[in-house]
Image (tube, rainbow, N blue to C red; front, side, top):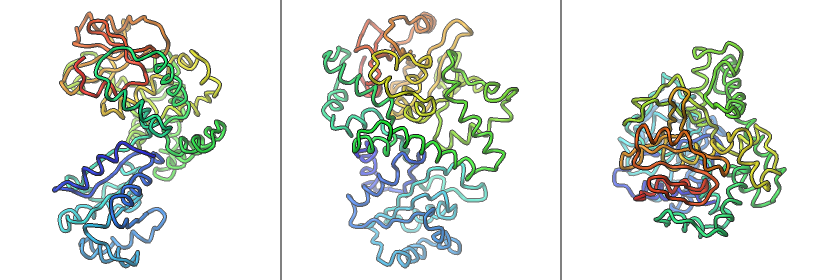
Length: 437
């Protein structure tokens, strides 16, 4: 299954100042598959070490962190030579061995000619404070679940992806193409981007099996709550996690602690939310009242929304029925558009907008997302789950701040009206292609 991050891995391999690579991302987004494929395709040998499956590996790092000694120990463990040029060393689930994480520093300083990659799902929540994290000594990459464009590639529609990536204008796509993309987009909303889910559907075309796998993934996440936290903290994390779908289903999607449990407060749940964020399971979108750069300097951290990492998993938690896929409008409007807004948050993140904000003006208006582009222009984005042309909140924002460009994301085709653009929900990466709107 093609992942766009593969090209970045090739760039990393060929860098003169290459450092050990740490690939982060939530569990089951495909980190192991991607790095194994990279190792098998681009190197003569891939020396694979999994610290969860082989706990004894940790003992190799207990005494000396001298990199030459560690290479010799790893060679003895796998029973073959590790070549500094033609072998890729792959440390998987590295969070299970804090000393192995620390060792990356010494591999970089003492044996930089070796090619070393590592993957960790829960590094931010599992590596203890006593461990020494190799700050400045590693390269980082982040892998998410498959984006919609990656999904199109996976189902054999690379021509459509190429067409959208090369689109340089805001002219409407042919209606037959637009309807085809909307059909694929609706299926993606139900499937989501978890690789196992997509591969299973491609192999078996079984919607019921898809939902079973989604629920298995959700259960695996819940097991991690207990595995990597105390019992009392695991309860709080579960309470936050279970409340997210219902919080998003409200008309006002601002997160409220009081709706997690009666009398809930920041002090009780703040660390639980941070755990979920560090685990890559949620995205937090903070409020801003004044859209100025840097946007993070004007955020109100007391007001925020929480979105889940994957639309398919959100659909499983909401028990979205598959028959909505064939319904022309209901899928877009169900749960006050929560499904669509969550999708937008994930697609914007995957498109490179790692810091997301929303704007509100007391009770007058609210714009769903505010981003800054590569030219430091601030762009307001309104999400419309249905086909309504109404954009009251966006108009309020435009009158107040007169942005260079404003965006509506909706099921409609491309539309450009002076400084306003409607972009179809399936074409969110279009935002990040350096277009001169």
